[in-house]
Length: 375
Image (cartoon, rainbow, N blue to C red; front, top):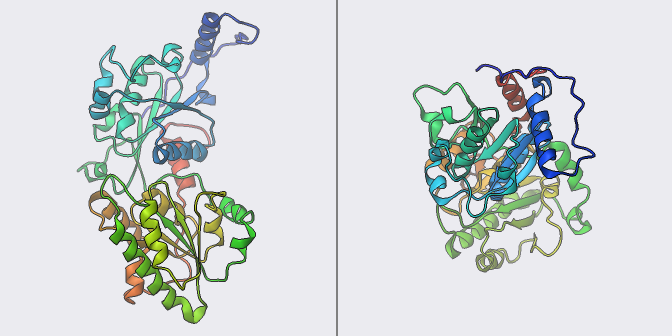
């Protein structure tokens, strides 16, 4: 790909400070954006999402990977645009529900726009159109439309787009979901955990629990089964010392079924984060000797694998499609094991597993793609 066009240099000293007329301020900001040199690209970066946690976290993770600042903007695409994002390429097509937001009214476009997920693909296309093609776009995850609508796509290797006969030239692959954690931060967070957690007897098993998702509802039987598997796993570990479980549910975990899980762990040492105090995550990832993650969340599995500790996946229900493919890839690369396989002695629990940290590689490939210095 060719580098973004160089802007002509300018010695203008115009700034927006001292001006109170909103129209004049917007015009000056627009002029400064247009005169910004590529050496300092991106001078202005936007992250646009609808606030969905999994989408926001990946976009903000990319900012951290690239070591740049960005404005975090919320937008709700029109229902039609969510379904058919290519419509945003049509001049005059409405991008958002309701009244036009300020970030659209101003007409001051970013050098770089980061979006994630099919539902936000139309926003990316629309902003690029409105900017006259000056905004460069990075879209995370498979948008399920041709790649040429974006400057760069970053998708996990289990996404459908990787099945193309010819790999698109503007595609960078990750193994897991982008995330903001690193091992140093996890270790630091573990030092701030409450005393009751620090005093748990080893081995400490963190249990990251998901729940309902777009693919299935996690009912009572799923959590009863999870309790049984955790109990069996505790028995396997008992010769080395009775384990301590730390249960960390998510917003998607049904509370009524969480009770069934706890009832099934009677006689086993466990601590349940009930949401009333500070969330021990991610500090518990640093404290834990073993991490158990339910299979429904690609994000949670990816974050757990940063640690290089044994990561076991527990299935609330059978996974299919792209999520099943994700787990297959992660197992083949040695990042995870199925909890059920350790219970049946099909796999031996290792002391460590290969850590999954793709930040440096992704940063290098992205900078190289855009022709940035220091790539």
